[in-house]
Length: 250
Image (cartoon, rainbow, N blue to C red; front, side, top):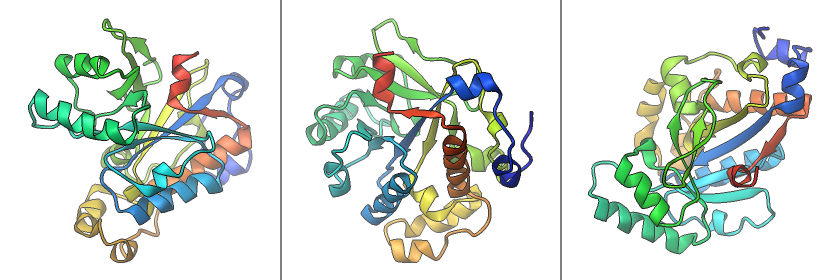
């Protein structure tokens, strides 16, 4: 089954019955040091569509401290790229002080290694979200030998606009058979409605000036468009949604 565009989706391009009954969508958000206003806009977008989110944070945000309605989960998003293990320990500890109850971790750029996985487990994390399996339906969560639950990402906005920019979300993307899909977004790409890597790189120098950044928002089909189409699909087909911590009790 294929949905050519959003009009097909809204006009009745239905999911297979097996998918409609068993599909669960998990939305995650990596803050990536975005401006507070850019994060606020992203959170508002989730609220408008009544969608829960697991947010992996790179620092302190007042908006995250105010989330207390059970529709949000906070994980940590340290930058472990090109640093020593000791430096990574320090960065994780700093984020831990902000969110001591975080169960999950997702390294910036999904940096991962055997020492890092052991460090994550040693630091008390229950799961990590550092596996990118872009639109690979067969990849499912698994338990690492050290006891860390490893969660694969099914779709991510920056990969989308790098490898298939402009490809419209389709219900046909969602595999059947009880697969639990993780879709990962970034506040800046929702804010910009990023359409391509070139679009993002041109606007990136303005990332800490939301007023100027907004002037670079795209009017075409971008990352925000995919989010809106996915939200419409979830609502239309009444698909289940959840937080990544739900994987720990499934």
